[in-house]
Length: 284
Image 1 (cartoon, rainbow, N blue to C red):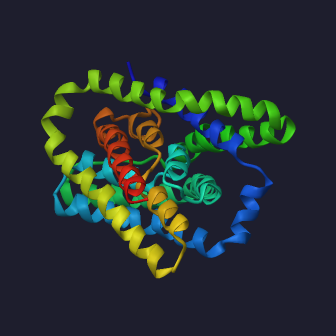
Image 2 (cartoon, rainbow, N blue to C red):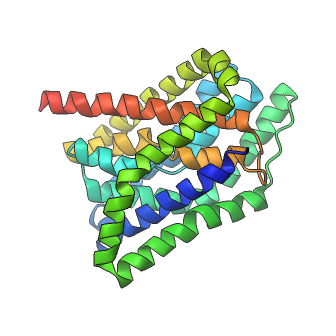
């Protein structure tokens, strides 16, 4: 069974959940703190893909894993980043704004970056990686933008009901992602175990480098502690479900192997960010 039929409803629910988090204030926050939003977007949309590309190149990852690692870095922030920002006593409003903006902007940046990476990997390794850009755009619009917009409209029409739905869905979001990881592990157990050392190293390096660079970037911006923590979390937590959907989709890459980095990333990012939140709380 192709895991795309499991990941699609999970991704739609996650994006709808994000939409119910958004209100007029979420968008006015861009005007309230444009510098923080700009720095957060630079970290997510430019620095993170560059880090992933450099790590994949330095470790000489096989073509399918090279593409899979950069794909994770091209995806928008994950919805759970908002929860982690709250736990870390960050700027939750900024976190929601960054996640929403990156979800929209990456509709246009993912095709551009991944087409470049596909061509680069194909030339360097001789392994043909083909990206149907048109189908990628359509899938992202259906799985990301449409449910996000539906959530925003629902919040606008029935704010009280939206709040209740948000509270219910929030409880199931993380277990659903872990269920996806478990099902995927069962399906690709041999490949994951065989490549876990290499991919575990690459993904750990990606997350730690992303956190370090975003922390440095936010210090350059001279932001408050709350804003710095939020930017670190936003850049360190990407939407693994979307990466899995793109990699395993029969309409795009149709590769379960390409989704393996995203599965390992889904586990590692939660472990590392939980340690980060624990250290913050311990210091406080």
